[in-house]
Amino acid sequence: MASVREFAPWINAMVVAGVMGTAITADLGARRIREEFDAMEVLGVDPVRTIILPRVIALTIMTGLMDVVALCFGVFGGLIAAWELNANPSAYFANFWNNATTTDMWCSVVKTSLFGLIIGIVCCYKGYRAEGGPIGVGRAVNQAVVIAFAGIWMFNFAFTTLMLGLNPDMQVYR
Image (spheres, rainbow, N blue to C red):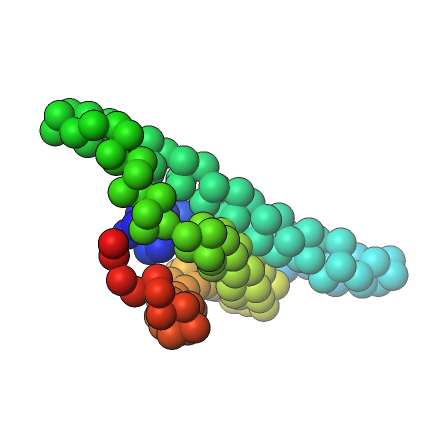
């Protein structure tokens, strides 16, 4: 259950922020210092609508889908660990489904998707507002990752507290 509620969403968010968040921030920052956004605006093209919004939407969807994959591998990894400890696979699944609820699964995917939204907004904003040449882009990348990590941590605390508060039956392991 720890994998479903916390590990899979948290690790996915950290990896996405560290890999995709930095890439998006650096790309947008480089476009800003090369004045590509200014050129787009002169041509009448909205850079937020054409470049930034698709990235935010893609990160939101992708992190949710990555959580589904992580949940499958987490459950399968638990089964392998139980099998190595000579536990009965049917007992493993019975115990898992005794404790897991549909709310657990959906909240995990929704929480991870919202992590992707946070990452997308923060990293796109910092990249779009980068200034000061290549050094400024590097600074923006660093700030974006730190802010995304902090935002994810705070949102995770609030979301999990709210989820457990609204579903008291999920707090008890059977």
